[in-house]
Length: 349
Image 1: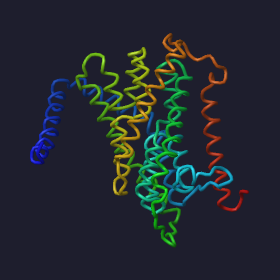
Image 2 (image 1 turned 135 degrees about the vertical axis):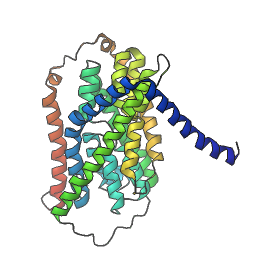
Image 3 (image 1 turned 180 degrees about the vertical axis):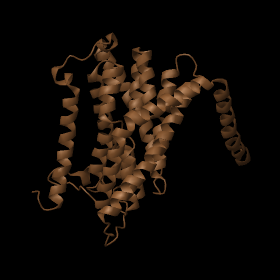
Image 4 (image 1 turned 90 degrees about the vertical axis):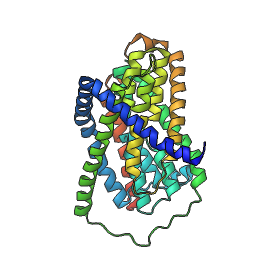
């Protein structure tokens, strides 16, 4: 295809897609309105209370350069090939969920603490669904087996560590010019920037979630492909539809949704990386690979634990009180970061 024809196709496809979506909205006004209403309510009542505080706190971490773990704790600089600062981003990205990892990686690149290629790798391996979603929504609520949620969480972290080790080697030699003296930012200014900037970013994230949730409802997916189509577009809706589909197909779609995150998260990440110079391509390639691996692993889980199809809750005593488990995990990870900070300030070993 000639360059001229390629340019023409690039102009025609967006216009055609817009026309189709506009027509779908006109033909299904009630469906569109209810979809937007449900997505907006879910965003305001579930996502905002969980995500907004972490977005504000992540701004503090990036601004003041905390924490940087001691080499006696974890050789993080050798693990990812991008210095000590990568470990806190990795931990917070997997603890807080999308898109905290992308937000922190972009901030570190803007501050000159990471190169652009290093930031692209760190953004990719530090972005994942939150443990709360995987354990209590995907596992306990959707599949009635919190152990399956724990399995997905383990696969997500394992993919992140493996990807960090493999991809980090390719960017470890990138030269980063760090300013000799960084501007000391008063806490009052940092606080205002953290709250204001996080609020603006959160509204944008909500817009992406509502729009892609709307697409899931109005697009006519062929029979049997609705769950996978939803998983490709928006991972939370895709997880719900995959559980309703059930069977091995539902398990694969759930794993793929958890590992990939959906085009909605891809758009949110692109918004977070705007102005940082970080390429989105490594993130997209990594997440597609992670989604495929998690989907195949979910099939393996269904083969090894066929009881998941019976819809019976997990009976392990340690998992019956999920709130206690989640609090213990959170306190453990926050305690690790406090220890890292203490070492930086001369209180550690």
